[in-house]
Length: 407
Image 1 (cartoon, helix red, strand yellow):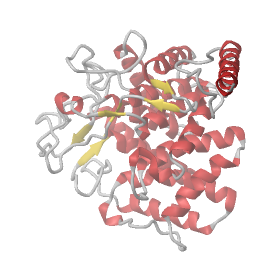
Image 2 (cartoon, helix red, strand yellow):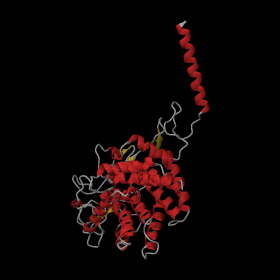
Image 3 (cartoon, one colour):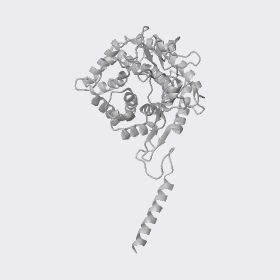
């Protein structure tokens, strides 16, 4: 009798499960039909991504696998997407995520914990962009004080002989392409908001140096770095450039342009030049995408053995295309290109797990130049960077691209 009862119960469960399966068809790529998801597939990609990040990394400093709090450009990049999502939705959980990160990193007087200006690390400026809105919303004087301190770093940041910001104190005479993203949107917003735009010529000069020294005349795309002294081991002895055109580096530069243009006045004489730089790099990089519309780790060597399409590079370029078109900096056709590439990104890199959480596959790990052991910046070096799941730059790039394409 007991055996008969349990058989009946089990049979009923099977029937109910079958009904659930047939009445709930798969709504998105890779959705599991064995469990109901925590994050709804009916939400837009931007919110699904942000909610996934909140679930995986309850504290923003945990992004990228960090095991302790850190004032970091990667956190700043991802949280810039949360800031845009908060402005779009007015949902306080996105603002609180940003605020909790910043509050955990600064003391009662507005000093960043473990920050040393003498390092002159240009990466430290990037999270500073979050302070503008935090101060406007809360009027907490710590945020205003810290904005000033970060601005003061630029005042004494070492420069190359021609006026370009060094990437760090430990990298003399070197500009790195990602430094344009780290500094110039912050610098532009600060000088327009608090200095009546007095340093806009200096902002434009940084981009002018890139166009003069980083852009490869053959391909029209940028190298990763430039040593004006031509002394470091990775530098070309004639040009001073590093050997490789890195996909993510190109993405950093394009994002630097579209986000600097957010604050750069149209009336300024250098405005049209910046728009021109964006159009030039966009036209060039569009010739180096895969058949499906994605971009490579080594950007200009699409057939190189071991080369691969890479999500952080692809996501940033998609975002720059979409934003450039939405803002009118680029022809409207770039919006359609961005949409097609975004769809390919989802197919190639996005895995949705049983909880409905977004995971970004095969994000290149962090790379750099020089240092000990010495990083030579060759194609082989960039291809040796081990890809990982949910690298912060991949998550941030996808989030920003999704927000822009949903406009």
